[in-house]
Amino acid sequence: MTVFANKQDFNNLGLEQFRQSHTHASQDCSICLQPLAVHPTKDGIPNPKCHAAIRVAACGHIIGKDCLDAWLEVGHTCPTCKRLLFEATGDPITQADINNILRILGPSFGEDAIMVVVARLMARQELERARMRQAHEIEMEKIKAEEMQENCDKFSLSDEDFLDSGDEIDFDEADDDKEIELGEDEDGEFEKEEQDEDLN
Image (cartoon, rainbow, N blue to C red; front, top):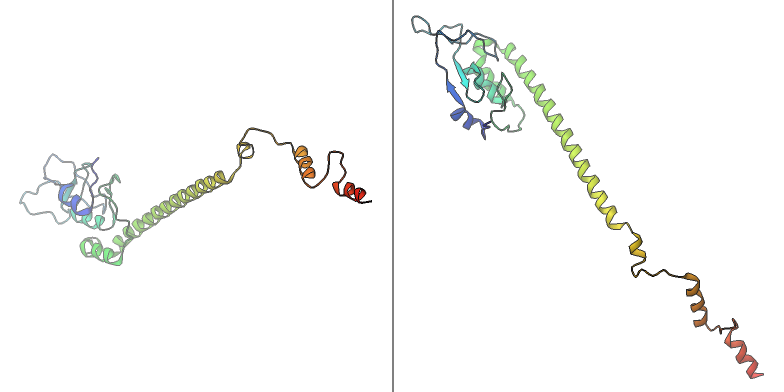
């Protein structure tokens, strides 16, 4: 599936001119629901009730040319099948975008009908942004949890940290050694007492 880098690349390479033919079935634009000019007229003059069509090469859907131009001001998918046509900019719809859409489609379809469609698209974009924010928050929580676990692992002590030599420590024996260093003889009496007796 080809996804173009931006709208300009899609407009240059992703659209095919639509050739009118009597063999085509009549169809309506999936954006404005008005009939498309898919059949040639007898006198060659375009039917004012139908508007020019263009084909999206990636999926083959036929859409009103002006409608697709307006759609791509704020969208990046096929309006019929929602197939991704080019990478989204991530920018929200601006008043300038709405003004461009109204300028292109307003004379044909009326401002109210266009604003209903734009409002629906803006609501869809807001839902998508909310979904992306939620996914981002979940990812950040996951990263924090992993970092916290790594920090806990760094400071946790194992049995090996206490007994590096593999020898067990006998704390009673260590106390006896300390008492001898402080001046106790093997009988448990202090040397000072013996010295006092020698003086008498």
